[in-house]
Length: 94
Image (cartoon, rainbow, N blue to C red; front, side, top):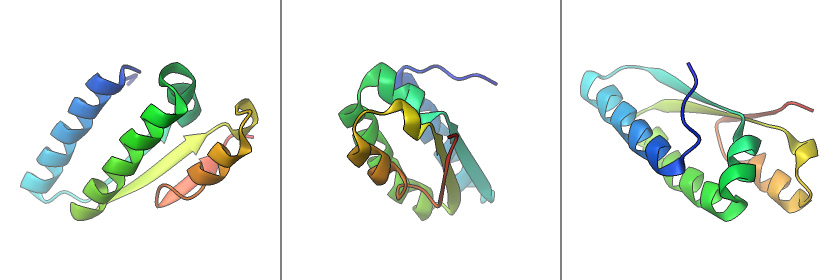
């Protein structure tokens, strides 16, 4: 299933999913592939702010988060280092 890269649409979808998970007490995992694509489309600051706000929400409902990104596509290596620490597990494609 491919999901829109529009951050606003993605935000609404994720909060709907989190609400469903919380309501039904489902153990879940959310995988973000490829975060680098989102960063290149919407900008580093927007995606970082988006994800950093989601992480506590994931934890509050018991969702395990996985972030997959392509570090070799980023010019700013500080962004890469920050990404390595966002989710429960972070994987790089390169």
